[in-house]
Length: 166
Image (cartoon, rainbow, N blue to C red; front, side, top):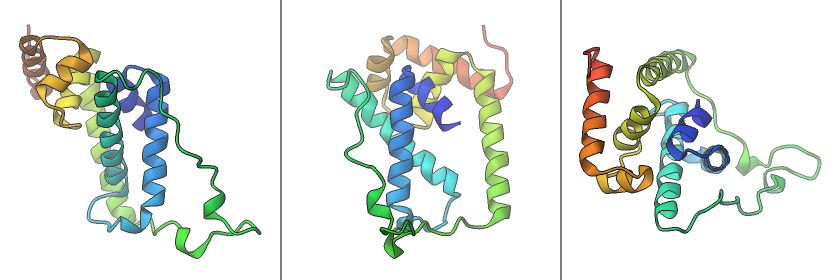
Protein backbone atom coordinates (compact mmCIF):
# COMPACT_ATOMS: atom_id res chain seq x y z
CA UNK A 1 0.00 0.00 0.00
CA UNK A 2 2.89 2.34 0.73
CA UNK A 3 4.45 1.62 -2.64
CA UNK A 4 1.13 2.04 -4.44
CA UNK A 5 0.57 5.38 -2.72
CA UNK A 6 4.12 6.63 -3.38
CA UNK A 7 3.99 5.55 -7.03
CA UNK A 8 0.70 7.38 -7.50
CA UNK A 9 2.15 10.56 -6.02
CA UNK A 10 5.59 10.50 -7.63
CA UNK A 11 4.69 8.96 -10.98
CA UNK A 12 7.98 7.04 -10.95
CA UNK A 13 8.27 3.52 -9.58
CA UNK A 14 11.97 3.88 -8.74
CA UNK A 15 11.47 7.14 -6.84
CA UNK A 16 8.49 5.56 -5.08
CA UNK A 17 10.52 2.51 -4.05
CA UNK A 18 13.26 4.74 -2.69
CA UNK A 19 10.76 6.92 -0.80
CA UNK A 20 9.16 3.86 0.80
CA UNK A 21 12.54 2.42 1.68
CA UNK A 22 13.69 5.71 3.21
CA UNK A 23 10.45 5.95 5.19
CA UNK A 24 10.89 2.43 6.56
CA UNK A 25 14.54 3.09 7.40
CA UNK A 26 13.52 6.32 9.13
CA UNK A 27 10.84 4.51 11.10
CA UNK A 28 13.29 1.80 12.06
CA UNK A 29 15.95 4.27 13.16
CA UNK A 30 13.43 6.26 15.18
CA UNK A 31 11.37 3.37 16.54
CA UNK A 32 12.21 4.53 20.05
CA UNK A 33 10.37 7.80 19.37
CA UNK A 34 7.15 5.94 18.49
CA UNK A 35 4.85 6.40 21.48
CA UNK A 36 1.80 4.51 20.24
CA UNK A 37 -0.52 7.53 20.19
CA UNK A 38 -1.41 6.53 16.63
CA UNK A 39 -1.20 3.19 14.92
CA UNK A 40 2.30 2.21 13.86
CA UNK A 41 1.20 2.11 10.23
CA UNK A 42 -0.18 5.64 10.45
CA UNK A 43 3.12 6.81 11.89
CA UNK A 44 5.11 5.17 9.07
CA UNK A 45 2.74 6.63 6.45
CA UNK A 46 3.34 10.08 7.96
CA UNK A 47 7.06 9.58 7.49
CA UNK A 48 6.42 8.48 3.89
CA UNK A 49 4.25 11.54 3.33
CA UNK A 50 7.18 13.80 4.25
CA UNK A 51 9.61 11.82 2.05
CA UNK A 52 7.24 12.22 -0.91
CA UNK A 53 6.80 15.94 -0.27
CA UNK A 54 10.58 16.40 -0.07
CA UNK A 55 11.08 14.49 -3.33
CA UNK A 56 8.38 16.51 -5.12
CA UNK A 57 9.91 19.78 -3.93
CA UNK A 58 13.41 18.74 -4.96
CA UNK A 59 12.14 17.60 -8.35
CA UNK A 60 10.30 20.91 -8.85
CA UNK A 61 13.60 22.73 -8.25
CA UNK A 62 15.35 20.40 -10.69
CA UNK A 63 17.48 18.85 -7.96
CA UNK A 64 16.14 15.30 -8.37
CA UNK A 65 16.09 13.56 -11.70
CA UNK A 66 16.51 10.08 -10.32
CA UNK A 67 15.83 8.49 -6.99
CA UNK A 68 18.11 9.68 -4.17
CA UNK A 69 20.24 6.91 -2.70
CA UNK A 70 20.16 6.16 1.00
CA UNK A 71 23.50 6.98 2.58
CA UNK A 72 25.48 3.86 3.49
CA UNK A 73 22.83 1.78 5.23
CA UNK A 74 24.00 -1.79 5.13
CA UNK A 75 22.42 -2.75 8.48
CA UNK A 76 25.78 -3.39 10.13
CA UNK A 77 25.15 -0.81 12.85
CA UNK A 78 22.09 -2.67 14.15
CA UNK A 79 23.64 -6.03 15.03
CA UNK A 80 26.41 -7.44 17.20
CA UNK A 81 29.18 -9.48 15.56
CA UNK A 82 27.36 -12.71 16.44
CA UNK A 83 24.19 -11.51 14.69
CA UNK A 84 22.02 -10.50 17.66
CA UNK A 85 20.36 -7.10 18.01
CA UNK A 86 22.28 -4.37 19.77
CA UNK A 87 20.32 -3.38 22.86
CA UNK A 88 19.81 0.24 21.74
CA UNK A 89 18.72 -0.81 18.23
CA UNK A 90 16.06 -3.39 19.12
CA UNK A 91 12.68 -2.66 17.55
CA UNK A 92 10.00 -1.28 19.83
CA UNK A 93 6.91 -3.31 20.76
CA UNK A 94 4.30 -3.48 18.01
CA UNK A 95 1.39 -2.45 20.20
CA UNK A 96 -2.20 -3.52 20.69
CA UNK A 97 -3.64 -6.13 18.25
CA UNK A 98 -7.15 -4.59 18.47
CA UNK A 99 -5.77 -1.20 17.50
CA UNK A 100 -3.91 -2.86 14.63
CA UNK A 101 -7.16 -4.46 13.43
CA UNK A 102 -8.96 -1.10 13.58
CA UNK A 103 -6.07 0.47 11.71
CA UNK A 104 -6.24 -2.24 9.02
CA UNK A 105 -9.96 -1.63 8.55
CA UNK A 106 -9.36 2.12 8.32
CA UNK A 107 -6.74 1.60 5.60
CA UNK A 108 -9.08 -0.70 3.67
CA UNK A 109 -11.65 2.09 3.58
CA UNK A 110 -8.89 4.51 2.58
CA UNK A 111 -7.86 2.24 -0.32
CA UNK A 112 -11.48 1.74 -1.39
CA UNK A 113 -11.97 5.50 -1.52
CA UNK A 114 -8.89 5.96 -3.68
CA UNK A 115 -10.13 3.25 -6.02
CA UNK A 116 -13.25 5.35 -6.65
CA UNK A 117 -11.15 8.14 -8.11
CA UNK A 118 -9.53 8.26 -11.54
CA UNK A 119 -5.71 8.25 -11.27
CA UNK A 120 -5.10 11.98 -11.81
CA UNK A 121 -7.87 12.96 -9.35
CA UNK A 122 -6.56 10.51 -6.74
CA UNK A 123 -3.06 11.88 -7.15
CA UNK A 124 -3.93 15.56 -6.70
CA UNK A 125 -6.43 14.80 -3.94
CA UNK A 126 -3.80 12.91 -1.92
CA UNK A 127 -1.17 15.56 -2.62
CA UNK A 128 -3.52 18.16 -1.18
CA UNK A 129 -5.25 16.32 1.65
CA UNK A 130 -2.68 13.78 2.79
CA UNK A 131 0.73 15.15 1.83
CA UNK A 132 -0.56 18.70 2.49
CA UNK A 133 1.17 20.37 -0.43
CA UNK A 134 -0.08 23.81 -1.38
CA UNK A 135 -1.75 24.50 -4.72
CA UNK A 136 1.38 25.94 -6.32
CA UNK A 137 3.45 22.90 -5.42
CA UNK A 138 0.79 20.52 -6.76
CA UNK A 139 0.40 22.48 -10.00
CA UNK A 140 4.18 22.49 -10.53
CA UNK A 141 4.50 18.77 -9.77
CA UNK A 142 1.62 17.72 -12.02
CA UNK A 143 1.89 20.42 -14.68
CA UNK A 144 -1.64 21.83 -14.46
CA UNK A 145 -3.16 25.26 -13.86
CA UNK A 146 -4.60 26.32 -10.51
CA UNK A 147 -8.08 26.40 -12.05
CA UNK A 148 -7.72 22.85 -13.33
CA UNK A 149 -6.47 21.73 -9.90
CA UNK A 150 -9.49 23.19 -8.14
CA UNK A 151 -11.88 21.53 -10.60
CA UNK A 152 -10.13 18.18 -10.10
CA UNK A 153 -10.28 18.53 -6.29
CA UNK A 154 -13.96 19.49 -6.43
CA UNK A 155 -14.79 16.49 -8.63
CA UNK A 156 -12.76 14.16 -6.39
CA UNK A 157 -14.66 15.34 -3.31
CA UNK A 158 -18.00 14.89 -5.09
CA UNK A 159 -17.05 11.39 -6.19
CA UNK A 160 -15.92 10.46 -2.66
CA UNK A 161 -19.23 11.73 -1.28
CA UNK A 162 -21.05 9.46 -3.73
CA UNK A 163 -22.44 12.28 -5.83
CA UNK A 164 -22.16 12.15 -9.61
CA UNK A 165 -19.75 14.55 -11.24
CA UNK A 166 -19.78 15.57 -14.84
